[in-house]
Each structure stands twice: as structure tokens, then as C-alpha cells.
Amino acid sequence: MRVPVPLAHAHRLLNHGPTTLVSTAHGGRRNVMAAAWVMPLDFEPPKFAAVVAADTFTRELLLASGECVLHAPTTAQIDLTMAVGNTSGRERDKFQALGIPTEPGGIVQAPLVAGCGAWLECRRLPEPAIEQRYDLFVLECVAAWADDSLWQKGEWHFSPGGARTIHHCKGGLFYTTGERLQASRKS
Amino acid sequence: MRVPVPLAHAHRLLNHGPTTLVSTAHGGRRNVMAAAWVMPLDFEPPKFAAVVAADTFTRELLLASGECVLHAPTTAQIDLTMAVGNTSGRERDKFQALGIPTEPGGIVQAPLVAGCGAWLECRRLPEPAIEQRYDLFVLECVAAWADDSLWQKGEWHFSPGGARTIHHCKGGLFYTTGERLQASRKS
Image (cartoon, rainbow over all chains, first blue to last red; front, side, top):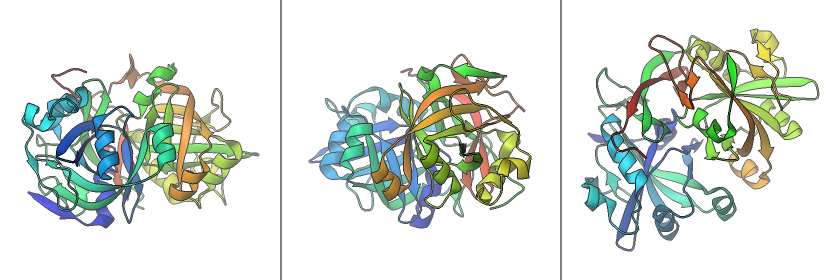
């Protein structure tokens, strides 16, 4: 079940470096793409940095709407993650073409891709210089959600054989998020 | 054994979002800290984005030297990763205090922490506005290395029970890099 995550914990949803999906919507159109180059940038208010290439329809909708949703897809969504990463949404609605179920977000207009491990509704903090120079966007998270079968008490908890977040290596190659390890020196 | 990685593959060393160590050196002083908020920013020449907080000795040495080394530590280095993340190197040399073995790099002056899975020698691309606003640094990788027991043919390969790269969740809690999964749709 999708449950709200306090904004103070939002950075932890992506702190372990999983690959993401980025959804956008504007003027009756919507899109979703895969993005591995996304990371936390600040704790509270939570900010994230995301690379969105110059020629993408996602960038067009992100700039027009000033909003997007970052998602942490799971092992069950590897083929979906590749599929939305390999095609453009400019000519066709990927949600419809690929049969991707969605849910409405709480604050932003961009749809939430159903079945993910986490969702971060974000607003763009305009930084035109680095957007143009590095395709790098700064986003402030305004609402966060997680699947309570994977996220409990402010931490990811993955069961043996169950769904896990995924990390992109290259092409169609991913790694799952593996075993929990506790350092002996606690911070 | 530490082997060179072609710069065209350097982004793949951190594409899966592991936590990193950042070493720096300037004027006879040196330091190392842990940084989870590091990600690729471009393919070739390879660039990376890294968050380095304002009050850190690492930032002082990075600004003074214009250089650093990003490392992907492994499961064997979890306690080391926490230890260098919890103390400042301003008052004492962490390498000496914690008995951290080092090797000289090929291009930059900052030392390489021995025993890691990957090493990325980097130069700072000055971006004062975002450094000050977000503690965000843009780095160009000028030399890359990997341990050939973990990195073969441009990919990470982890053996059951062997060392793996690690992903930071919060405090002393990490996840290992888990199982390889190949999507059925290849890019």
C-alpha cells in the first residue's frame, strides 16, 4: 500500500542510489522516462539533482510544468524501466502504448506509475545555467510516498525473494539492492 | 589487482549508485571522507556531480588543489567508510589515525585508498554558484581504475560470498550491491 513518507525522510528513499523513473505532464500530455543519474542534494526541505538530457520530451514537459515525479521502480519493473528508457513519448503516450497503470499524485500534476517502491513529487528549482551546461536539474520534493511492504520505520526492508529496488549498470543490465549490512561504528 | 578503466567506461563504475569515499590532498595535508551523494553527469569526457558540505576539510582541500579521487569502497570497508564519515580530518590525519593504506594515483595528488573496488581521479570544474548554493561540485574524471577481481569487460561482476560495492541507506546501515538481472528488452 502506498503510504506518505515524512519529507525529513525523503532523501533516504534514493540515498542508496537506485535507478529512477521520471514522470511529467503538461497541457494534456504526459510522459515517463528512466533516469539513473538522480541523487539527493539536501535533507529538509528535501532536494534532488537529476540529469535530464536536452532532447527529451520529459525535459520539455518538466520545463513547461515545473514539476515531475521521481520513482524508485522495483525488480518487477525492469522490463518497463528499459521500455520507457528506449522510446520517446513525443509521438505516442507511453502509458497507453505500454499499458502502464497510473495513480494521481497528491500535489503535482504528473502521474504516479503504480507498483513502484517509492514516489517523490517534485518541483523544479530553476537553475538555467547548469540545466543548459550539464542537463542537470535541481528539484525540491514536496510530497513523498513509499510502498509499506518495502519501506517501514524510515528504512527500506526487502524480503528474501520479494521485490527490491534496482540499480542500473549499463544497457539492460541491472543489480538488485542486496543484503542489509550494519557497520559496527554507528553514526 | 588495480587495472586502468577506459574513460569511456568510467561512468559505469558509479552508475549503479554505490556510496563513495572522496580523498583530497594539498600542501602536504590529505584527507578522506564518505559521500553517498555522488553520481555520473556525463559520458565522455566523464563528469560526475558530488555533494561536499560547506564546513568540511575535504572541501577546503578540494578547492585549494582542484582535485580529488572518488572511490567505490566494498563490503570489507564498511567500518572504514563509517569511520571516515564520522570524524573530521582537520585536526588529525585520518589515514594515519585509522591505519588506512594508500597508493599514489596516476595523475592527481590525492592518495588512492587501497582495497576499494574502483578509483576515479578527478579535477574540479569550477561552478562557484552551485557550489555555494547547493554544496554541489562538478568533477571531470581524468583517470579511472578498478579491481579486476570485481570489474571485467566493462561491467561489475560480484561473486557469491565475495566483496561487493555498498549503498548507504542511513546512519550505519548499508545495502550490498545484489544480484545481476538482465532486462528482456536490451537497449
